Length: 249
Ligand SMILES: NC(=O)C1=CN([C@@H]2O[C@H](COP(=O)(O)OP(=O)(O)OC[C@H]3O[C@@H](n4cnc5c(N)ncnc54)[C@H](OP(=O)(O)O)[C@@H]3O)[C@@H](O)[C@H]2O)C=CC1
Ligand SMILES: O=C(O)C1=N[C@H](C(=O)O)C[C@H](O)C1
Image (tube, rainbow, N blue to C red; front, side, top):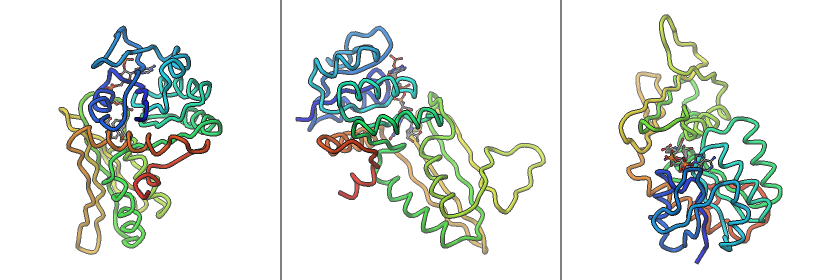
């Protein structure tokens, strides 16, 4: 069985990963709060992660935390020579550069969304935006009221795909006198209740509207995808990997 360490183990996704780990074993977790264990999994502080990775003989780390915590644990993975799956979102440019640096020493797979449906949505988005190249584009996402980063990592990834196809400028929300420009894409983030994650791209023009959307119904979908990625990553060469490689494997 693959021996997994979970960064952000006390969080919503940390719990979902422990629950989803049936073909792998979560042997240790990292978090900053004063908790000894979560569901029988011992909790260690992130600054002691390198030592714990060796002590618990960890094969791979699965991370769903905050950017600062992910970077601390990425350093520990480099020190201990352990692969890392990064699910945390909201990194700034410097954080992304530090993850890229880490991937020169260890196998590192980062995805803003570990659901298979979003992988397919990304492909559909590329085709639709490339084909309907005159249509107006608007991007919406909705998440639970505890989410701290906006727009979501997934929305930013969808935007990246769109910008590879079309020269559009994001406008984050609109207010007041705000007429739409031809080359803009409106991006909207809503936060309410315990909504697991919804994303929708609307393409409108030529007297028609095409809507491409995805809704996650349980955090288990992200946890299962991240664990699939973790098992796939063990034993690979150092480098930067994409979740599409796992889905296509
Ligand atoms: N890629 C994907 O498919 C998905 C990505 N996510 C992303 O995962 C992240 C976590 O989401 P979620 O579980 O809902 O958030 P939570 O707020 O529920 O959990 C965050 C966890 O991070 C821990 N944490 C805080 N600071 C640190 C630190 N310095 N080092 C290590 N751990 C730390 C917190 O525990 P404590 O306070 O005890 O330290 C907590 O356990 C978010 O960035 C979210 O966007 C979420 C779902 C799917
Ligand atoms: O915070 C969440 O919950 C989620 N975060 C990811 C994101 O920012 O895109 C993925 C998913 O939508 C759930």
